[in-house]
Amino acid sequence: PLLKLWEPFLANDKKAGLIDPDFVSSPSDHGGLYATEGDDAIPRLAENPPSPAQPYAPKNSFIPLCFFLAARSIHLSVIPALDLHESLLRWSSRAYHDAQARGDNGRTDPDFNRYLARVLAHEVTIFSPGLLSDSLRFSNAMSGLLLRITDDELARMPEHFIDDLCDCVTMMSHSKPEAMRGVDVANVFKVVVKLLSPSYAKLVRNYNLRAKLGDVLHDLYLPPKTNHRDAVPSSVYCDPTAGGQPYLLSDKLAQETLAPSLLLLYGEVEHTGYYEKMNHRAKISELLRFLWESSEHRSAFRKISQNKESFIKFSNGLMNETNHQIAEAMEKLVEIRRVQVQMGNPQEWASVPEEQRETISSRHEANEREVKSTLLGLNKTLEMLGWLNADPDIRRLFLLDEMVSRLVNMLFHVLMKLVGAKGLELKVDNPESYNFRPKDMLRDLCSIFANFSSAPEFCLECARSGYYDAELVAKAGRTCRKLNLLTPENLEAFESLAEKVDAASRDVEDFDELTKDAPDEFLDPLMCTFMKDPVFLPTSEKYMDRATITQHLLNDPKDPFNRKDLTIDMVQPAPQLKERMNLWLEEKRQASTKE
Image (cartoon, rainbow, N blue to C red):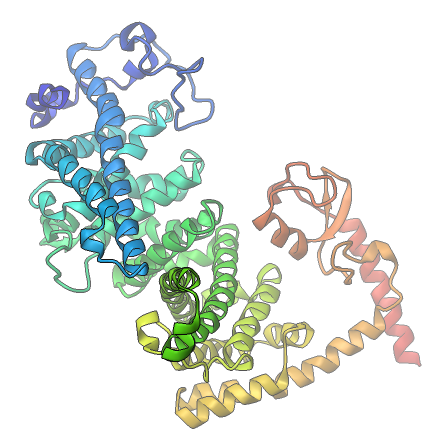
């Protein structure tokens, strides 16, 4: 009813312009629905938003009353109902698979049919055409309001306004995409791009909410690769004012900010949860690939090199994700292969007690689902690392002191799992069904090595890395040559890596010999290595190498010595210590030359 009450104002821009956002800051008008204190307090976008400069005095009090009551009613009814529907679908699917794992018919299982009955009964209400279209149109109207108000007014908006519109449009795109046909959701796209942009990154503080904004872009506005009947209609993601071009390409703010925004988001979703971050990053990588291949966004990618801090967060997330994915995938594939062999032997499988067979089958199905998702993400991650580093400016960012050691260790970790752990010989039935393509993975990985092989700092870090293994590199090179995986240029570059690392190893040995008796104050207290760029930690009054503390803070924003809150912008240069270190090194070099 509240959505219908608001409907007459929806198509009238003049009346919609009478929505006064300060309604949510006026307790006497909202009657406690948008309280800022007490047990019923509603979190705002900003942590401590500024109070309105003037008392609430709207030109029309009825229109904002209708609008914000409708917004609250959606939060308390439509969104929980859509969430329950997705939960019921998960529960019914789980009941079906559990029945199948027991050897029963999933379709006749009582638990499955009980959940199915609840799903169908629930859909009668939530999927009524009027409710779906009204909710979508209201989400677009809410987005329009968030676009036109001032930054101070935006800061005072309840956080659930953003959360609800994200949930509404994404859940509908999953469950009833055909209901979105012809409904204008252009404002939703614009407000998502705005809130993800670097200018508003600190306003939307909730990492889970920022991740949802990225999901909206992927689920609604990324053009599908195929015209599947369940795909979101083109009327949703195409801009009618730009000749039907996708909003991702036609919108000016998206062209300027979306590429760096998504790189920052890729790093931020590290904090959203163990499994959630993999799903978010898979979607972000697909969006980034689409933007990378579009000329409209190429200048924005070039600007990425100007924002060192954001890129470091992105690359840290990329490397964390890759290390996790390769380790988990190889572990699961070994287990899958073991069970496949066991099940393939009828006599052996029949000798296993029935209860134990059910347990093994259930775990096997879970492993299959997990490895399929993990390998899909790993393939996308390696591909993204490859095409990003085709750009020389972006490649230089990976060679920063704060990043290059992580990059080298990650690449060799993957190579060791793929080649050293007999990844190419790991035989599982129907490998493609698990997205397991070891030859493609090795090709992408060795291409990345080839791109970096000419960089002296990369070769020097390879020489320092405990993961480096010359025989492993040689084996990978032989495999690439045998299977014709690389272009002649990339193969030559990759095979030259061993010789360059060998030369760099002599430089590392010389420097280690020179600094072996360095004073303790010149050594990083965590890594026990000679510091290259010493910095001062004001929270513990300790000195560390900038690269070491940067890497630590990316994953744990605490001082490693006393667990006090610490951010990289609080860290201070230590020029006096650096000068003493330089003088000491010069004296050592002169003494070494005389000898």
